[in-house]
Length: 103
Image (cartoon, rainbow, N blue to C red):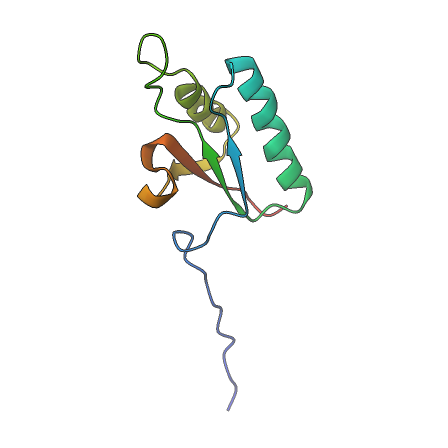
């Protein structure tokens, strides 16, 4: 009898991030540089990983509206990366989980 190969698919929601980038206190320009470097580094490593990007809620911004969180979301969308808000224990809506494709 021939056995079928069984693929084990790891649930992306259960995997832990391999690295974290904290953008608290960054300007938009600094955040862009850090984000670009961080993503490209992990893509050079082969991709296929989950990353955690902490943006914060923006509560400490002068007008109470942060710029880093919306900027990061737009940047990820423009570059075609899949993301979702982190689990509550990882920062909830003040952090994003990003799934990098396998290179």
